[in-house]
Image (cartoon, rainbow, N blue to C red):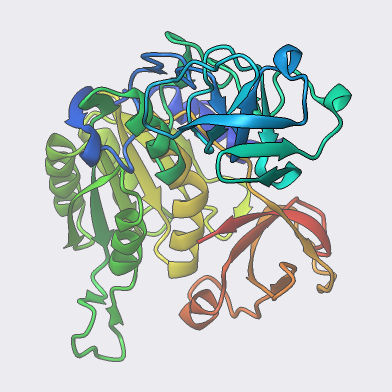
Length: 397
C-alpha cells in the first residue's frame, strides 16, 4: 500500500482506488425501463432536431418580400403534427407553436402583433421592421442527425429521459447495475427494533446504508448481514459477498483494536488495500481496497462516520464502478456563524440549511451521536487548519 499525499488526500484516495476498479458490463433495456440507469454508449440523434423548420410562436407565416400590404388573406392553418403547407403569394397562413413553417414563408408574425378577422389578418408592425427568420426554429438548430445528444456515462434522470425518448430506438444501451453487499461487523449489534441490553447497540448502520443505496437507482442491493468480530467469520463473509457482488461495504472492524479484523481478512482472501486511514474527521480509519477489480470499502463503525464516508467516498467510487462519468461539483454554502474550532484534519461538520440556503452548524457530541445526525441536512468539508465560518462544499444526504 503506497502512501497518499496529504494535500487533497481525499480526492487522491478516491482517484487511486477508482482507477483500479473494473466497470460493470453493459446491457440493453427498453426505453421505458431506462430511467435512473447510466448510458454505456453515446446517444446519437437519428435525425435533425427540429426535423424541419417550425414556428416558435402562435402567429402568421408570411413571405416578407411578397407582402405589399399590411392586410393579408388567411390562406389556411398550419398545426403541429401536420405536413407542411405551401404559402401562396401575398397570403398568410395561421400557424401554431411547433407547427411546420410553410414552404415559401420566411417569417412568423406573433399573433399579438396582428388584428385578426374571419379570413384576413392585419399586421400591426411596420413592414420594414419584418425580419427573415423571425420566430422560426430552424431545422437542426438543436442537433443534427448523427450528432451526440448524450455522452456515455450520463445518468438518465428525468431531464435526460426526454432526449432518450426523442432520439433512441425502442431499446437503449446502459451499464448493468452494480450489485452492492453490506456487511455490518460487531458483537454488540442487535437488529433494529429488537430489545437491547445496555451493553448492546441496535444496528443503525445497516438501515442507514440500505436506505442510502436504495436512493441510487443505478445500484442493486445484493443483501445485508451482520458479522461477528472473529477473523474467520469476517473473512468468510467478505469472500462470499465478493463472489456474489461487485462491491462490498463494511462497517466497523477497520480501526486499530484487537477485534478489528477487516484489514487482515482482506489480505487473507487475496485483496489489495489501496488506502487505510486518512487525515479526516470523522472517519479517519476508513479503508479502501479491491479484489479482482471489485470494490471493498471499509467504513468505521460509528454512525456519523458511516454517513459521512459513504457519502464522500462511497458515492464517487460506486458511480465509477457503475460507468458514470458525470460528477457535478458539490454546491458551496455559506456558513455565516460558526465557532472558531480548528483541527489539523479535513473536518466534516454536520450542518442544517435555513430557509435562505445558508448553513448552520448542528451541535454534535461526536461520531456516535445519531440525534445530531438525524437533525442534519449534510456535512460541509472544512479544510485542515480552518474554522467553519465561510464558504464550503456541502455534501447533502
